[in-house]
Amino acid sequence: MRSVEAQLIHRPAGREAGEVVRHLLAVQAQDVGAAQLALRARSATVTRAGIDAAVERREIVRAWGPRGTLHYIHHDDLPWLLALTSRRTGSLLRLSQEGVRGDDLLPLIEGALYGQGPLTKAELEERLGGRASGQGIVHLVGLAASHGLAVLGPLRGGKPTYVHAADWLGGPIVFEADRDRALAELAVRYRRSHVPAGPEDLAAWSGVPLGAAREGWKATTEPVPQEPVGVVRLLPAFDEFLMGWKSRDPVLAPEHARAVFPGGGILRPSVLVDGRVRGTWSRKGSAVTVEPFDELPPLDDEIAEIRQFLA
Image (cartoon, rainbow, N blue to C red):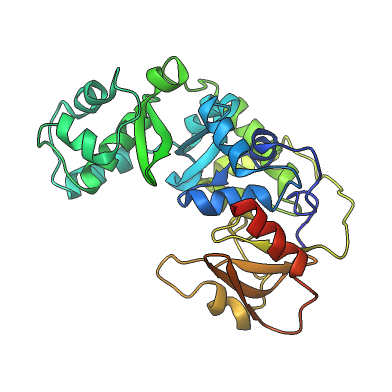
């Protein structure tokens, strides 16, 4: 059984957004609203305002991290984690597929971003002077990010913004040069929050090759958390408790997998009871609808806390 305590699902009081992100190493943030709910699920005191404040003071940064997916990452972890997970070749391939070509792509996007502060995709398209549009713009930013030159800024009007690292962080992200040290840190930190796990899980979660994950794993030991009981939690879409390992079978019965993972890259919000997924849930406004797989304990407190958090 996966550790509820290691994942902070028991919601210890006093942990603010930056501490939770640092403990988990990275929190998937393709969907910012879901990422905020993932932090709520792990702290009894975190608020949306507190998360926004952590972003504004650059304590947590939205960047392309594990598996090349957008995550919240603690500022202090950017140099070594992104050194392992950045994908320059992938960015160039996607740019070519989008019809964005040239020998000047990196200076092009760096020049468009530098000194401007956070820009929306529409604003960035204008500054690029027709060289890219649509997803081509995002992949250009991804190319800059793979060199430590770009991250995402705060949402503006619900839309993502892109910003030069020097504007947002005070300078480019200088990637850790010692790969062995970075791998050891990755394995130790991952294993601390993903109990039980193996190097295969680490490779699947991070996107690093399995051989490298095994090398880093040699520096780790298995933590022994104390498991709380009676923990009922409404987890958001794309939650780390389901995304953080190679297999979901230990927490999600195969006969219910389709209800949580219907296909098309969708991962629905789930009801977690003592470390097992026992249903799904959805929200429309303040109304929460639960689809149980079997009989569930009372969810009134969780639903009320989610409403309060979102309000």
